Length: 113
Length: 113
Image 1 (cartoon, chains in turn cyan, brown):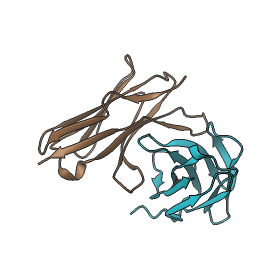
Image 2 (cartoon, rainbow over the protein chains, first blue to last red):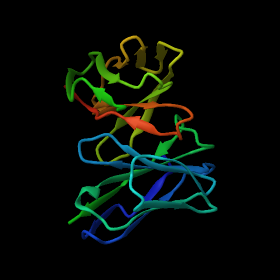
Image 3 (spheres, chains in turn cyan, yellow):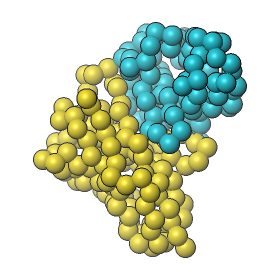
């Protein structure tokens, strides 16, 4: 186990609703990156948070937003859910924006109906 | 646009044989590459990485080869074991690009007894 936890494990939402996903980083890590993984695809980078500030963003619309808290845990918020938002959402934590040393959580499976 | 792709979606090997998983990338500015292993129900797990100034790197039972001339990356697994069955992703990073890690689609490795 990596020490990165995510909640909830599974979630079902209706199109148009809003969702908040949570991630607790591994002890000692100050960076959290979020990824969206559609079924049968590789993860797609959403954004990264470092010391409570956004530090890089992928090609996702503004309705995908995030937060990082002083304890370095993080939230991913998605507004106005669309069917295509159905995916596994992964967070990964690391130290000082490191990528090679990032550890992934098990993910949250979001289904939008 | 930028893309990272894999040649084969599924690879079946006999236990004890060597496995070779290939990956093509298109962004010549990528200077860091990582191989991940993802088992069912889990997040990606770091296997091995390589920087663009290297052409080979070895780990425990794994070797990564990088050919920048043809933009090709491969992962070799020696003496493949049933526990190696998983989906394998290559990912590329352009440092200074906001830590945006770009994953390929993935190759399913199946180890037959």
